[in-house]
Length: 150
Picture 1 (cartoon, rainbow, N blue to C red):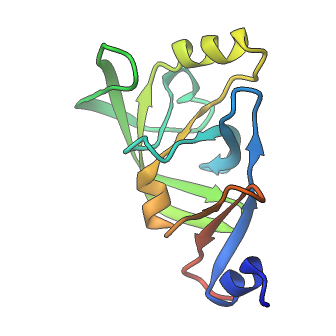
Picture 2 (picture 1 turned 180 degrees about the vertical axis):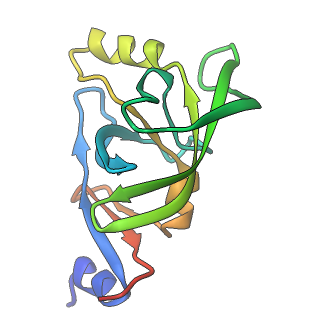
């Protein structure tokens, strides 16, 4: 029987290791504009976001946004927008990626209270859809379709 990873590799997918954190989240390493960061993989987040405090480190050009972000909490969060960013997750690459910038302090405070490391942002459904993502929860791998075949 053919392994899932071999089958998906033949179809043009790249495999990326996921790290399960102490908070039961999956963490993933990614590069935005060639700067490496740590992100939570969140299939329930409609848009990918990065901490507003990290905008300069990731070379993000920002603009005002009328969008409000919301999560599990009761309040809406003001946002900024950054367009035309390059995102790399393993060998998967997206150009002209749009990111929402939000204050992640409340998320990172919650993570630190549980002895987890802070994150730079969240990889959401927008990126997962573009990458035709497949998650192997058992083996802790994310598969993303790489448009450029080897």
